[in-house]
Length: 378
Image 1 (cartoon, helix red, strand yellow):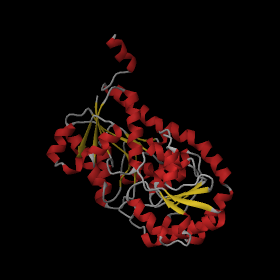
Image 2 (cartoon, rainbow, N blue to C red):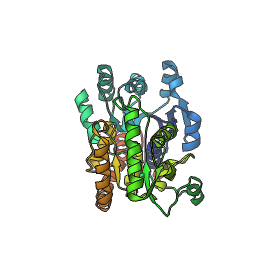
Image 3 (tube, helix red, strand yellow):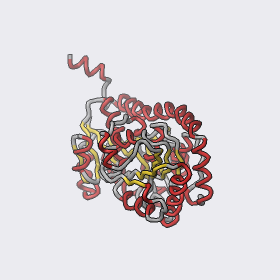
Image 4 (cartoon, helix red, strand yellow):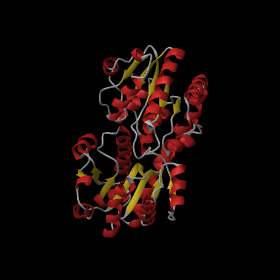
């Protein structure tokens, strides 16, 4: 079965690569597949994920894309939060081409928002209503798709990154990064402004995080470690540290790691303060209590799944943030227990995406059950 997977891959974002890792694991359990990833950086995708093919989709014109898609049995859109103003139409170009070619399309645990532009909302509505299967990773995305006019059945699943297992980091890596495992450790995550967070004021959140990090160092005698989830996060981490009083008690991780290695790293922290979704997902997977700064609906969707309240970033002042950190630090064992109770259900939902896609493929005749394949081989 020839499967194409389209998403924000090859962009050197660990969260997106974690998503693709989870999707590939599911497809390799379904059937013998030939995987083509529509990637921003094909060489990175081929090296990192060992797929059969990767094509530079953003450098191809419509005719070239059609030639690639016509060879597929199925196109998968997702996962991730790729349907938002300013980018939705770009990611849906391949979906509309697949529809024109008669190549069936399924979405894989996507999320949506913000979607305020009329053109973006219409594109999402039309592309998904013509798709064969729709799965979303959070309730907020589910409600937004209904709001923009998606009438086809929507299935609520979860982010495929929840299916990953940690890959141990070599002990020397932590030493090289200057991380002292004998101290209390608090992880921080920042991100750049952009279309996924149109209302985010960098100066405001740099100052907010700097004061929060100083508070944590002073109050808990902890070391703060910034964990970049993509390359630009290093630059923004330095911008935060430049505004701190206790910069000498901060480390910024500088080397490249796989998503599974960062997942392992998260297990060394006592607490987290973060913006990026997969930083927070990795913290939850390792049972690490955290305070989130929700800059987008996808982060709010995760907090809803974990029954963790947190006001939007724009509504948060330093006093509120420090009070929330202090309360969550004091109640971190309760938070850890809450995460532990809710995580199995989220992981079951994450596996459900693969089950739904397998059932759809079986019903459509595009793949046979493994037992049938084995009998045919014998």
